[in-house]
Amino acid sequence: MSRHYRFNLKTVISLVILHGLVVVLFCSWYVQIRPCNFAPLGTKTHILLLSSWRSGSSFLGQVLSQHPSVFYLSEPAWHVWTKGWKSGEQAQRIAVRDLLRHIYKCDFSVLGSYLSEKPTVSSLFMWTHSRALCSPPACPLTATNDTQCRQACDVQDLKQMEETCRAYSHLAIKEVRFFELESLYPLLQDPNLDLRIVHLVRDPRAVMNSREKSPRALQRDNAIVLEHRNMASIEMENDVMQKICQSHVQINERAILEPPLFLEGRYKMIRPTARSDAFRRCVKRLCRCSATGEFIAKKSRRDWK
Image (tube, rainbow, N blue to C red; front, side):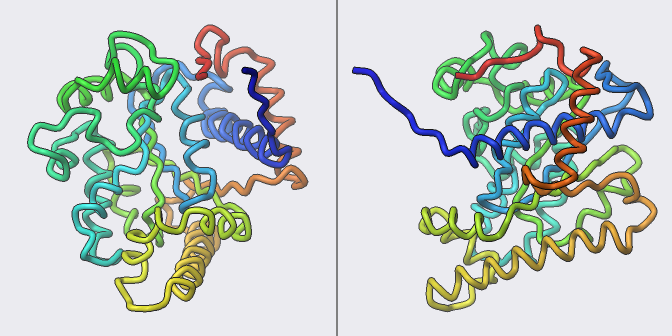
């Protein structure tokens, strides 16, 4: 029996825009060194994809993950919040930041403390979203979908993951559990890290609409965000959205209006919209980068089914 799928045009356009923005971000950060060239550098580049729930960050993270130079992890702080679910967001900021610091140095020992006694890669939240964990050398084959990755690539332990991590020139992490920029300052000032922040902000109306479709999936996170205040579910959802919106504004203002010296050139905010002038400039730059043939060689592209 044949199946027919309907695609929402706006959704398709948004996905294409996000893909283009990733390409432009990579090119713009390296154009001063070697235009649109991704040969491995002497030191790692560390990328933090900073966003909130239901903002398209999972797709954007997977786009980053498809580049052959990128080792990608999705929301490692999920493990911190899961283990410390009785605490509020503010009490867990330092723990989340320290976890990221160790991961950016390809040290998964701290992450292991939040997992089972003998953790494997399958213990990690959304691990199949990482191309690096679903292809050699981490996996004996190159998986083309989540199911194949789970079946063939779930036996590696954290030590093997560390070895895999060290083989990549770029380490990208997607996180939705930061509500201010200040707790990240120690990472930006760490001489052993070269941290770049990509701040993804989606139209709050679209975020709210998406959240309303799966309220139960976000209940625990909502409680942590609001420091476990007792309130009705509707009021809780409104307060969470208010905090998310306020955090986006505060992060952007801190990075743009009053940036400390160590943050200059390390922050970019993207708001995907097909009608914006920024997007039109993005497309033009994307064409220039793609014309060189150096951004992502055809032989390096992966088709995930």
